[in-house]
Every structure is written in C-alpha cells, then in structure tokens.
Image (tube, rainbow, N blue to C red; front, side, top):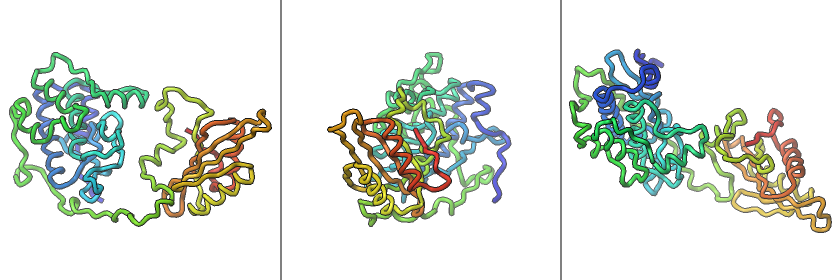
Length: 349
C-alpha cells in the first residue's frame, strides 16, 4: 500500500499548539473542508467521522480529508432512506445520530463541519464534558456558547450549522450561498490540472454484501464494531453513568457455542437452579421466587445473546432485581459452564 505523506500533519495539532486561527485563515480552511465534503456527498459518500484529527494540512497550507473507514455508501441506507449505525467521535457527533432513530449522512456530516469550524475560530470544543451522559445532553440541547467577539457572519454561520434539529440545519447549498462563507471564496475544481488532486473513481464504487433479510426473528442480534468496543473490559465507560450501583451491573462473557445451543444450555442450567424461564426473540428471562423462605430473597435475570460472528457470541446477563450474591453466583456458573476457556473472567460494566 502506498499512501501520500501529508507533511503538515493534523489540523488538530496546529490548533493545539497555536490556538484559534484568525477568522480569514479559518474561513479559508472551512471553505476547503466544505468543498471536499460536498464533493464526497455528490458521489454518495458520507464520512461520518469528521473531526480535526481527520483533517490534514499539506505543505501549502491546504487541507486534505482523511480516514474514510467509517464512511457510508448508498447501499448502507435502509429502506427508510436513512443510516442507522451509531458511530463517530463523541464531541463531533450530531444529535440525531445519538437519538438512534435513523439519520441523514449529509446532514450529520454538516454538523461535524460546524464543530470543526467552531474549534478553528474559537479554540475549544463547543460541547465537552468528561461525563459522556452530560456531553450527550449538551449536544442534544445544541446550546453552544458563541463569543460576541466573532464577526456577526461567523456567529450566524455557527448557530445555523450547530442547530440540533436536522431539518432546520443549514444544507451544503445554504452554506455556499452564505455571504460570510463567500468572502474570498474560490470553488475547488477537481479538473484543474494545477491542483494537486487525485480522485480514485474505484473507491467510490465499493460494494457491500446485502442485508440478511431472511434471518429468523428468533435468532440473536448481530452487533457492530462500535457496540463491541463498548463491551470491552479495558474501556473505561464509568463516566457514562451518573451513579454506579454494583448490584445493577451487566455481566458478559463470550462463547463459541451456537446461539441455539447457548439458549438451550442457559435454560437447562437456570431451570435446574429453580428458576422459571420465559423466552422471546432470542432473549431469555429467568425468575426465582422464594416465598416460603423470605430470607433467601428473590432474583430475576435477563439473558441476551449478541452475534459477533457465526462462531462467536457474547452473552449478556442483566439483573432486573434481587439478591446480588445469588446473581453473581448464577453468572459465575453460567460463564464457567458456557464461556470460552480464555474468558473465564467476567466482563462487567
């Protein structure tokens, strides 16, 4: 593999070392960013991870958009015409992506461009917090503090792009028609031989396997890489929760057993332990009541399977209510009986 070496590094490093840029210089970079992202959108490519770290600067001070690993193509859209994979970088992700009800790739990319413009002109992120839950609340509100020392045109641009309602947000056409944006603007021409631009047409015609629409509704859920990362025991997600209660934690383990075998063996195990079992759509709920011996308490546990690949599943156990000690004992037995040998340690979040 041969890649271009962009000598100027990331735009993030430039902002981190020098601070915010003058408005004229920042507008020029934003114009180039909009030209590049707009070109991609016209080709049916939606980046979905636009951030300062993915905007590179060449030796001439011009930007190049990088890292299309999370980008979406037309075949990624569902029948409703929307994208549904929740992905991106927390500080740059659009509120409709977090809402998990489907989103337009172009509109969400524009939000990310607005966050980039904010950092370029002001020097820090519009939405930031160490606690992810608080960060997402700020993004949903879209209440970015815009300094009054910015020009009225720049203030208006930021407010209209960082609009939490995607229907009211500026479009690419709106941005290019804006008076502040058009100052000293020379649209990029990919056909200009003097420009250092290379377009790999084959890269814009990638194919993806079709959706597996014949999958039985009773089979386990297939998860994507972003959900899998969130399950990692080495990833500190404690800040996502306002309050942590050890008794309410989820416990997960991996298994190479098939989804059908896993559900059957979980059912057999909990039934032998005196639980009543209910199954529905690949999920299992086990309840144990001790009405005669109240000192033993009651316990209700839900089990759900997630398919990583046809030969690897994640089992998630979640306590609805009941005795914590009994819950941990049940989880330990299930993970030791059904989990992979290297994965005996429970993954908790």
